[in-house]
Amino acid sequence: MTTERSASYRILHLCNYSVLIVALGGLLGFAVFAGFWPPPPAYLSASEISSYFRDNSFGIRVGMMVMFVCMPFYLTWTAVMAKIMERILTDSMSVLSQVVRTSGVAAMLTLMLPALYWMTAAFRPDSRSDGEIQMLYDLGWFMFDPPFVIFAIEWCAIGICMLMDKREQPLFPSWIAWLGFFTCATFISVLLIPFLTTGIFAWHGLITFWLVFVTFFIYLFCLVPLTRKALLRLEAEDRGRN
Image (tube, rainbow, N blue to C red; front, side, top):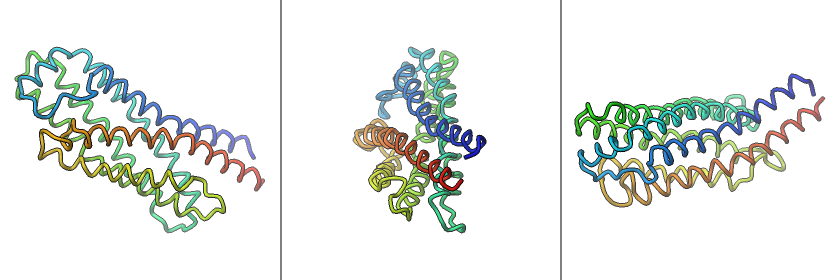
């Protein structure tokens, strides 16, 4: 294998690990600095929401900046997954790898924009009305949750590619594809947040917050080492051809 090819695989490995920046950096900003774990509930009044943002203005701004800076690395992870999907698919007419790429770009934006809305709500909160702060907080959640359908499109495309692998021993075990499908199924619940302020399907609820977030992170943390093994196998395949 050429030195150039080996360098390309090193970059692919780095891109695979970059999703850990998204997950861990996002948790650090969202949960630790901003204190959104769990988030202020949807049923709180405008005065209660604004009080939270005024009392925690600095922490929220730091947390949202951390979150904003880390989220673009989702794009580098998407790029490596798309390259692996291209190697799995033998049909040159398949659009699945392109679906992974394009939906990954859109998914990255849905992670970045809420951070900007919540950062704005925490910026100069004493000069904003209670209603303005509440509106920005609500807007962040409507940008953050319902667009999880975009992740579902990307992750279902990845799962379908995994199951289409014709190798005697597929690059990925089938269980990770089905875990991805289950995770995508939980995302359906976020479509209910515009209609509920209490209960398990509100944005702070048992299903829409806890189940969705937990399965989201479990899937990513399981996929990273499996992707590393897949890249090592592809590198060995390329070495065997040379």
